[in-house]
Amino acid sequence: MGDLKLMKGNEALSEAMIRAGCDAYFGYPITPQSEVLEYLAREASARTGMVVLQAESEVAAINMIYGAAGAGRRVMTTSSSPGISLMQEGLSYIASAELPCLLANVVRGGPGLGTIQPSQADYFQSVKGGGHGDYKLIVLAPSSVQEMVDFVKLGFELGEKYRNPVMILTDGAIGQMMEKVVLFEQMPRKTEFPDWATTGKKPGKDRNYITSLHIQSEKMEEINLRLQAKYKEIEKNEIRYQTVNLEDAEYVFTGFGLVARICIKAMEMARAKGYKVGVIRPITVFPFPTQVYADVAPQLKGILDVEMNAGQMVEDVRLSVNGATKVEFYGRMGGMIPSPEEILENFERIYIKGETK
Amino acid sequence: MTQEAIFAGFGGQGVLSMGMILAYSGMLENKEVCWMPSYGPEMRGGTANAITIVSDDYISSPIISRFDSVIALNQPSVDKFESRVKPGGMIIYDSTNILTPPTRTDITIYNVPGSEEAVKLKNIKVLNMLMLGAFVRATKIVKEETITEALKQVLPERYHKLVPLNMEAFNVGTSFVTN
Image (cartoon, rainbow over all chains, first blue to last red; front, top):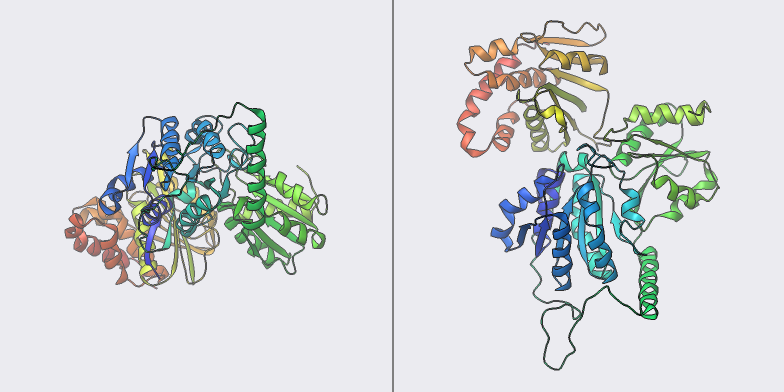
């Protein structure tokens, strides 16, 4: 059992980064995640010697991540939606070069500069590519401050296991709210680095060369095939999800991150009114937990997917059930958060009264 | 026991701290806690609020729109949140600051002349502790003695000399609630 603390999501994420033995953080401040850089600047280097650097822009930060990841270091950056958009080019390069690194997107309402309030509108950007080319991030969606801690450790591990960038997809509300957290013990920083890392040419060994440029199409296709095989492997091994009350469920509320918890409250209220509702929460949104939806679909009268966007994950839910049950959507946008009452009302409107908007 | 509360007032009145002190107290008593501040443009001069949930059980949603208790330090907060108190719940308001008091009959209403009492203590900034005192006495969601310890965790060490004044205000607040 580690330390028990009351922390903001952003602070908890930062503390976890230090404790996970992270070697370097490169970032640029943006609300609602500026606490990350502030916390690290205050705490990190004195405790572990970790490098904490405010880059001149998000474009610079992601390329610093590219460089340090290439040297085999444990590296992380964080930002919020507009800043993450700026990082997409570098992220595509990192995915192509197969380097491990960890990012957190503390999503705010968009499009554009938008608002500083929480949103989930960057789901497509996170799980369907974002940058150019056929690549995937491993995407973890925490729904509590505790998971902001746990997923930093898990994110580094998964990234290093698959040599792939990992994204923690969270939102402004989780970043700003305080909950109890159990912190894991301080881990030592790495002293040995992978044999592919650019740590200096050793006598008698070939030099390591990290690039995403392969002019020959045959070579580039080969790399694409290797990446796709890796993503299949990730889909086979790394799916994570939470289910609540599925056994007797006739309906399912589903959502990721913060919204999943609001769905659980709405489910409790629905059960109190006699509706048999369960909840599915994808914890990894790539790889997406397709099978759990497919398995439960035949027993259902319908699914209500709830998100803080115009309906993004709902497409993956529909693909998962493949027509076996009805999938309806309810969402709020632009920084608004759906309340449990709202979810229940919309469930009753759609599935009990059979009304459409 | 679960208490779903919202502390609301102008930015600068210490409403976020009230919630945070309550959340720390809950944690010190091994309860589940969640503190969710408003952090938008309202932080800069308008109304600020912090939803604070303290419970003996797992807390599902940190986002709620109906409250067991509303602690209102200004008129806009009474106007906005009175209708969102659950039937049988309560509203505690600073009667010095509020011209149009709440009117519902299905909830308990405590009027605490918070600003007036804080002036008597020669520091208007302790208004939040005064109102928190009334809230804790009325709900008993945490023990009153836990608050001192929580206050020490929330306040940076250089302000610990202010703990006695804050606790004095807290105790004055409790005296306005008689069960």
